[in-house]
Length: 332
Image (cartoon, rainbow, N blue to C red; front, side, top):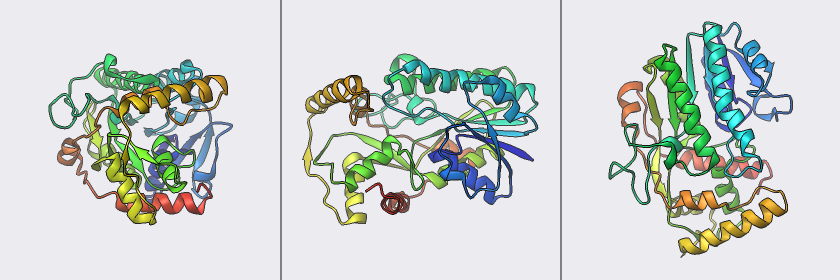
């Protein structure tokens, strides 16, 4: 059975591709002409050259495939041209699902994000932690990344409601090896290793082992119900708890100074204006990232546990693998 994976050159996508390869899948990987291929160099897989913004190349990549894992996304918290992000994340998802429908693909597993869930400052809208039933709308989405992922998820849900077999997974914050960009979460690890964390802010994330998250994608293929969303999460941790765990792993000091929100916001404003708009580089801190930081992004994966056989596992091993990979590859 031919399986197409989009985003396999990236962080989470490479883990999905590797889990599928271990299970003997006949893989085809969608690769952009300018993609960094380091994450897939050793994989036995066909490569289809294409781009989510090019529907013709998408249809060609999908041809002959019975299953599609749509993991690719433009994951940045700041972008000079937001329209590019929407073309990739929203219109690219639409084009892929249309191609899958035309080509008779049996099932599409669409990788969304926990960012599409309903959170408020401190706790989620259900008064404890967010889940798939937490009330949420486009107005709750902070920044272009969250808005584009929310809109892409709606495209996937609409396709399922129209009769297409689409299952949606919502990973939390993957951590582990092969984060080549690195992602915003990987930058936390890199900055810690470079001793660039003199202070921290009061925020929280749910961290999930990237390899376990990839296995959850396969569970969604095998057991997920069409049109349903499944949170694939690990441990709910404050930023301070994450830094403390990194300190234990690395022997480096964890910061003890908590930065007030107003100072963090001011830093984001200055960095976005100077480094982003004036110098044209991606800011280290953005206004949207600081605004998102006011929310404890804690979630429950109970639905995935019930329906997919998902298991919540500690992330210490994934944090350690992340540290070792960044160090061995010269990031710190």
